Image 1 (cartoon, rainbow, N blue to C red):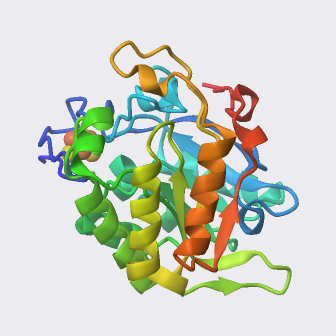
Image 2 (cartoon, rainbow, N blue to C red):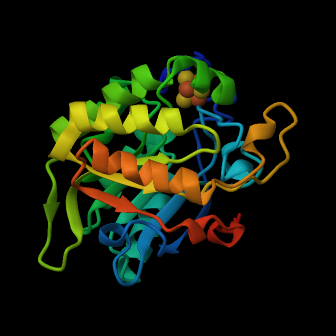
Length: 286
Ligand code: SF4
């Protein structure tokens, strides 16, 4: 069957061939563990039961999980083995099951949930470069969306990912998510259902940040939380894009934060500047 699970729609038969995302049909993961660095209502006390999937169809040049997104690491698991991993994370006290970059494996992940559906919420942690057809499958097993909004302008998304249509797909995807999942917290303040829109502030890209916050205030408002992330870390020296070879400055961070206020965004999380450190990036197990 020709794959069209992501907007690249490269059309390969993934039973036999690796797609643009770097993966065949078999699920491959690089790590699963209790991750404590998500937003507080997601991480909780013991951490979010996070499963990192290999491959990616967006391929940002500055990817913070480069070896993972470029499929340089990982091991194959069957849907049944993945279901066992969900059960193990739940047993270990995970606040939720957190699927990181799952888009290109959605039908196989759905099979894992048919085998075992944990009682804790399921989080879909995505770059948001998603067609609605794939999201509608995922929506059947998802409670919470952690959805990036990375770029506003076609020129900037083309510059850093090679894709001009990022915002077109991501904005449609996030509107679908907020229509589908209402925000609900439990009595301990943990998110049971809802959407968190994440934006990573990039060096020299404050104009993008302001436009994204403006879009959020206008189109999404209090139907979701906004998460302003400051953890951008340059891992490789980019000769093509030298402006990416630094962390964000205090001034950029402060101006991004001020934009939340000026657009009247009330529901938000912020990350302190100290989060921009390589030690916050996990080591891969497989
Ligand atoms: S998910 Fe992978 S194989 Fe499928 S269309 Fe996207 S890039 Fe191609």
